[in-house]
Amino acid sequence: MTAYADQPWLKHFTDEQREDVEHPPSVLHTFLDVAARIPDHRALFYFDGALSYRELDALSDGLARHLAARGFAPGDRLAIMLQNVPQFVVGLLAVWKAGGTVIPVNPMYKQGELAHILTDAGATAILCSERAWQGYVRATVVDSPVRIALTASEFDLQTRDDSRVLTGERPLAQAGEGADDVLTAARAAAGPRPGVPLPAASDIALISYTSGTSGKPKGALNTHGNISFNAHRQVRVQDLGEDAVIFALAPLFHITGVVCQVSAALAGGHTVALAYRFEPGVVLDAFREHRPTFTVGPATAFMALLAGPDATAADFASFRLIGSGGAPLPPAVVESFRVRSGGLYLANGYGLTECTAPCASVPPGVEAPVDPTSGTLAVGVPGPGTMVRILDDAGAEVPFGESGEIAVTGPMVVPGYWNLPEESAAALPGGELLTGDIGFMDEDGWLYVVDRKKDMINASGFKVWPREVEDVLYTHPAVREAAVVGVPDAYRGESVKAYVSLRPGATAGPEEIVAYCKDRLAAFKYPREVEVLGDLPKTATGKILRRELKVRAG
Ligand code: AMP
View 1 (cartoon, rainbow, N blue to C red):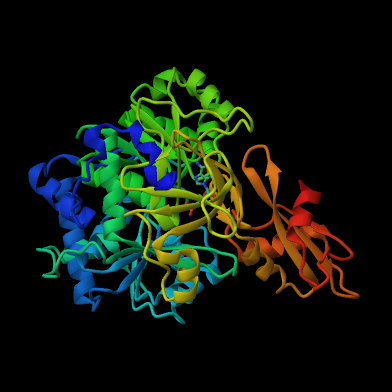
View 2: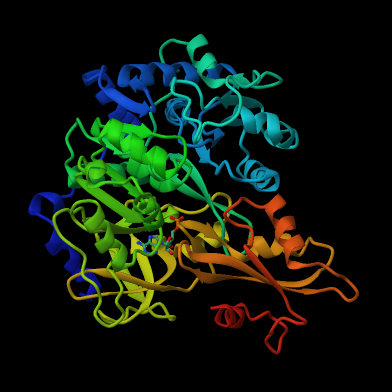
């Protein structure tokens, strides 16, 4: 028996929590049970609007019927490109009821980014905002497999029209021209859900696109079993009770949003509160109105909430638990949050899209230790049923306390990437996920993340892969060489910086290059800073030394 196989982290759990609890194959199964048991209970809040479990069930039945009638068959893929609006949840459940797979897409994506995902995933349907449809989605789907288009208005299902986040005309011009409003379509097709078998644990619930070293985003295959395991584990461990309200601080297009907010809420019979997108004043008002019990988001979101002049401890008084994940959490933020929130402990958690949100978290009632040498706060301990090992470059386990690559096995780890057998085998040898994160584990099973083996940049929890930005820079006519690195940023943790050299005789200033990228990449990806050098540092074989530039920048 090796050290990690002894699973020292299990000592943090009760016998009951350690027991291997059976999980229903899908969150949809549990949702249907909850909807039958407490149909009038609120499933979601959206500003001053709400949907009961009965209403959410009926709308998603109708939408599933609409999709089936339009030829959407089991196994088909529908992309949802929306902010945190109720129609996201209706779409998610409807696709699962129709036997299909959802592809969450960040609504900040520009045309090229969306086009790649739709084509790569073979998406035959899309659900996006009316604004996006009229803006560029309609033109983008022309050369894609998409045949069914649905739109959603962020003004629907509420009357408050909070102009801090809901901007533009109300109502917008009718989507029309090839797209149906999703709620209208769902109501028009009202009736029992299509006679498709409920999803099995191994069926693909989501294809979650993450980028990678190759530059092109790749789709992680989150199964219904993956989601069910993490959602039910959260419900069991948190034990929030059915009156709990989960505030969706994280975006629903990210795995954390779907799993820890929507799926956990629906599996636990809780209510999920949505507020379109993160805007500190709007979020605080939602806290005051809906009195949430739990939320999870990146450290920067909590810093932003506390930075506002009007946040008081009373605004946080309803919370029983708060989680931070997706980006490093400095111990100083935990302490300032504790002071400002009236004593709440910000619990760290660690995960990846490829392990369907968390694989390590701080158990309720305990506080994570800080490593005295590095000052790093532990990200948590692996949960029951999860195996975490720390490996050296040769793939051998290193002793407790020594750093290496974090490797994860468990029921939440994806079986692979969509249509990429080689990348899947490399990232998941024998089903064990090589995370690309560097960390160590102490003898009590606490896991610490200290560095990254992968080139990824983490800006407020938004992940940017240098290669994707460099690919865009190389399309600029003046650019000869490009290298993108993450540089320390007091607020975001890291921000994106590009180094370029220019073609002989070409001229282009940093501002022009920034603007060029801004037109082609989502807002969180384009470089905030560009530095033009005569030549970029290279190895003897001509490979650009990104690491050297990172040191220079940092
Ligand atoms: P994503 O696939 O967007 O969920 O990003 C996963 C990556 O976020 C991980 O591989 C880590 O690099 C980073 N990450 C997630 N949680 C934490 C955490 N608590 N501390 C430090 N980095 C984290």
